[in-house]
Amino acid sequence: MKLQQGQLIQIRFNNGVFFDAIVEEWSDQKSIVKLVDTNEIVIIQKTLQDVLLVKVLAVKNEPIVKQQYKSEVDEEFETLKAQPKNNDTLARMAELKDELNKIEREELLKKTLSHKPSGLKEVTYGIPRHIQVSSAAQHTEQKIASTNSQLNSELSKLFGQKH
Image (cartoon, rainbow, N blue to C red; front, top):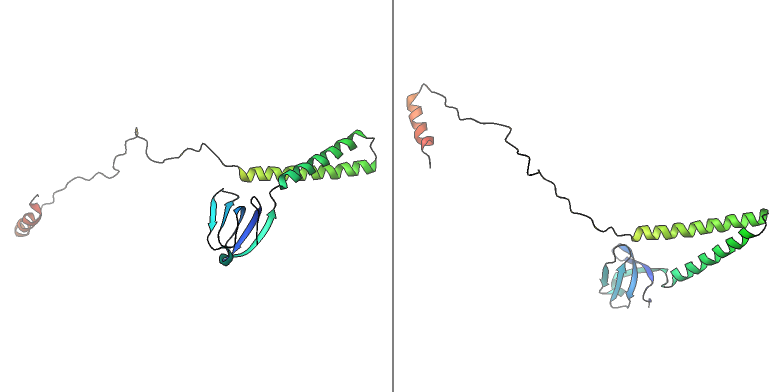
């Protein structure tokens, strides 16, 4: 199978993974495609073995054809707009207007999906420097007197030596 550079395709692999991509290079041995949504390059090392199905979604010059179609529809709409109105022309104008709206929605969707935000700042979270945090629990050293002096002396020998 030979695909042309710039074709929009959907690739399905043997393991079930699939994605939309634009063809950069294609052969049965090694293929290079660019992902539509992230513009990342993907290299398929063994195309014939790994790829189960390739679905061609669009050809390279599709935007040119769509622009020509849009201008033809727009031109016909404007000529009908200038003519006297009757039921037939109004119905045809409504169809053309619906078609123009559909084309415009597709263009907006494509622009929205291809938009990449820029200038995002990295947010760091923490306590501001001007706020002092003190411990909530205040521990004080307490000494408890014991009545057993022998136990006291042994415990003081054991714990009383400071290192």
